[in-house]
Length: 275
Image (tube, rainbow, N blue to C red; front, side, top):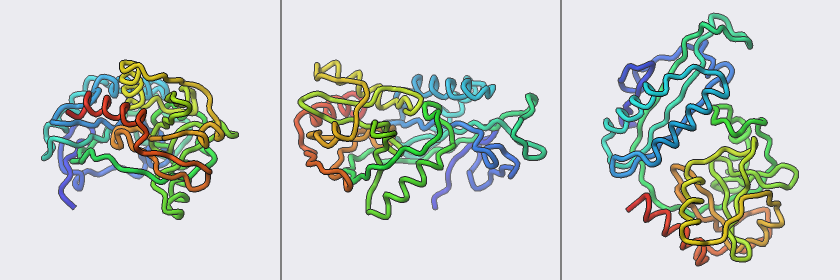
């Protein structure tokens, strides 16, 4: 593996040289949050929005993050990358316990950790599986508590799938690591934000571009029947961009990756952020 540039508690060095205590609450409780900041042509995409979401996540968990310092470290990681295109993973942990305990000390020093990787933003088609949403009740916080996602996505992998689309009692929420969009009767549909859905940055950027080109869009509650009647569907995320779905293995549907409405949305998004 190539050497990966990283930062831990303000010190920049190769990730292989960073040492983290087993008493870190990220390790013992998933008591941590994270952000993924993509960059293209050495420029961060929607940097302020990512930083704002990182701050919101830290506030929701009462983690006292120095957001200016975090911003500087993310920016420096982008500058250190060997490629003009890539992403930064940045994690903030409540700190280390002397002895593992559910109730944490208010005097604990937080830990910050980040790394940067080159990445090629190429469109990839996806085969997905429908599954029950078994995650915790605050998915609007970008925490590292992702075991529900891991379980369902690895179950999908056994069916040769790339991703999952989750639902709670038949109401669509989101994908395992993405937000969901689909076209039904000429209208773009996406589940409305709630505690069950992460407010994706790419999701917000795409919605803004869709409105600019005057394509009808609805954010709301949709069920599996709505998705089964979709003419096209795609997932959005910082690293996927807009990824069209070719097949949903356990839902009867015929999806068109060349659907004119999807293509218009993708063209508008790519022109704005990848040209």
